[in-house]
Amino acid sequence: MKAMAQNLSFGKSVSDNGWGMFVTFLQYKIEELEKKFVKVDKFFASSQTCSVCGYKNIATKNLSTREWNCPKCGTHHDR
Image 1 (spheres, rainbow, N blue to C red):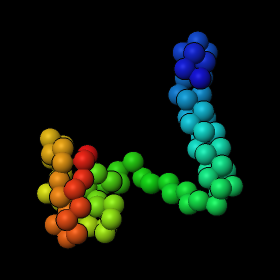
Image 2 (image 1 turned 180 degrees about the horizontal axis):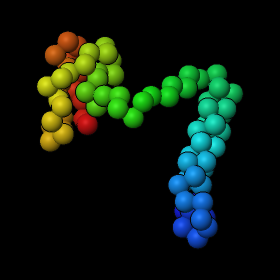
Image 3 (image 1 turned 45 degrees about the horizontal axis):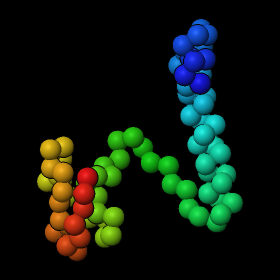
């Protein structure tokens, strides 16, 4: 895909198309295994949200904070 995007005059559309096909195949395979496929926005604050209780810690907005403990459930998180 990278070579096609560079050599042909398709540019960004080739890369976008390749990513779209990857996501489609991934979604198909996950649903085939009866698992849950969740597509999130690129601005979703996943490194600020506790994966156990769902608490959103706004104190971790600074990207230099590499580890934090959830104040609600006490779970330790590595960014």
